[in-house]
Amino acid sequence: PTVADGSRGADAAQIFHNLLLSGNAEADSIPELEVLEHEVVGCGHGTANGPLDENQVFYLESRGFDPSEARSALIAAFLNSTLSEMGSDSLHDWLVRLLESELRDSNV
Image (cartoon, rainbow, N blue to C red; front, top):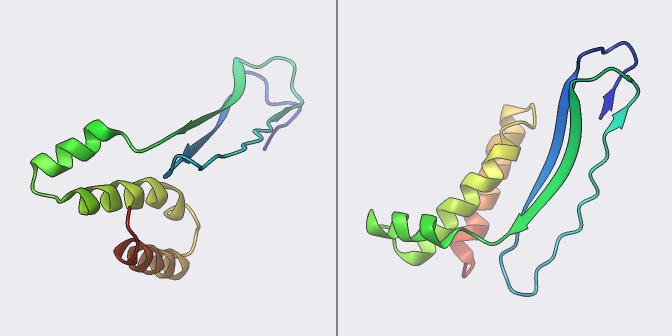
């Protein structure tokens, strides 16, 4: 993404969130935010990596989810935030069905 010249007073941010689902998982994010305007309020980028929040898993378990269902629900919610911005309802629906199938067949 680019903050164009002439965007005086712009405030922009770019962040990558990576969900690490195993001890061997790793993610290499390369945030890149090009700022061509000199008078901006603030522009920054960053990345955050981590596993599922065990407190969220525990909360869902306390509401009747078994551990696998809780993990699947949290993974689906994490991915849906990106999938919902794809711009195509049919693509979104297809990806959600694929994700649900993969999560159902996996051992998360």
